Image (cartoon, rainbow, N blue to C red; front, top):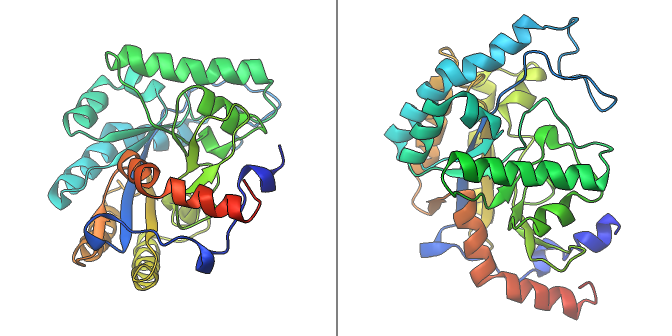
Length: 304
């Protein structure tokens, strides 16, 4: 299935109007990426997760490990103060390696978006049955660790991807998908088996790991957050938008960066027409209230 058939478009000015609960203009979801990077990962043809030095890359590993040992707790306390219920982008093995992180997340009622097993294992070029087995391992491992819990969303590790990924994710029972960073609104995805799946706006632009690698620091990231929200808030007056803030405890959980994230989030929440929500809440609202009208509009255009 080619990409145009999988995610057909209607120009945004012609789309059915997207309305959020209580007249909100922007649905805000905050996505801390809680991941475990293997100290000595297997190196295949797809990607070497530690290219800086011969293995082990102790600096790379230690930086990521800081996120689970320290940065997570700083970020959790921050989100508690702001009364934000986060959506973890979870490498499921992190709950196995850090059970206290799992308990703290579940006790807070946070949502979980599946981000693979380890962030050192990728989907690129993976045969279909191998990829199906990896996705099943994610589902089964999370259910085992959480006594029957299920995850509604999927974000491939490192946004690695195959042509089969949306089909296999939908087949496994996920309802929203974040690899297509292509829109400011949720959108239907056509799947091979006819399973209902939507794309939910995740971001690699407003993503602290990406901006940090580009040489931008925490004040720059906070400015980007404010600038993006200001425009989405204005545009959302006539047609609702989604704003994702993708952060990593090993990065924005650092002591010298954390206050910039907290101040920018507090400023966003000071506006009235904002719906702070989880990924699952946003996806379910869209499926219940807007998905049928969008499918009807796509069908009228001969695109569904």
